[in-house]
Image (tube, rainbow, N blue to C red; front, side, top):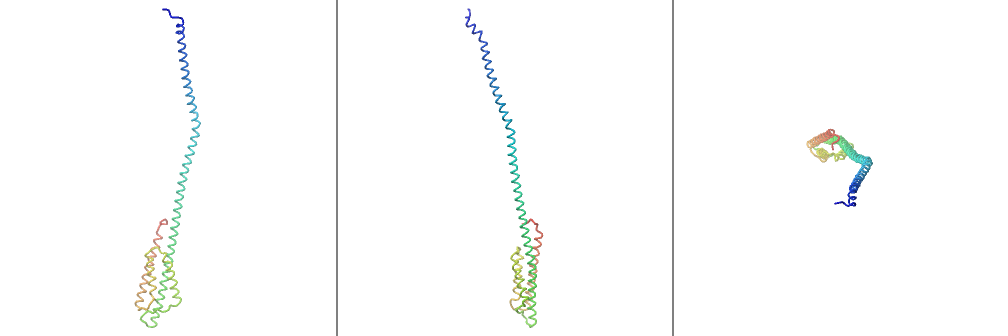
Length: 224
């Protein structure tokens, strides 16, 4: 059977059309791939352009954070050093004040003990002159009376500043004993015993004050 001429023409032209379609499809794929690569290249180009700037910014921010942390640490250390220096200064001032008080009190106690001894000796001599068996409560000479008053006032003004309770109590016991020495008439033997008791008290007070002074000298400068 013979094939019509028109069909033969269509059949003969079919292969070029298919090839043309395939070529167009291939070209389209190539165009898509090319466009994708162009986009990737543009993205890489943008990233390569922004990367140095981003690195610089991140480095700058990191530097700021590090400097801020170092600054905070330096300020904290400086504050602690100032506080330590202030604490040491205050402690030294306290120790200096206490030492000065104790030294002045020791001297005042010695002066009060001498003044009390002079007053007792005056009363004793008066009793001897009259042949009395008792110690009289005579009016003391002005210089002895003034010495008693002045030294006792010094002791009283200083003893309240003493931080050692035992030493402070012993000083108070001694001043009370001194006040009783010439307050009333009593047998000479009793007066002598009272004087000896006062001497024991002042010696004990001086010993406690000396111990406190040594303790302060032995303390480290930084102790509170």
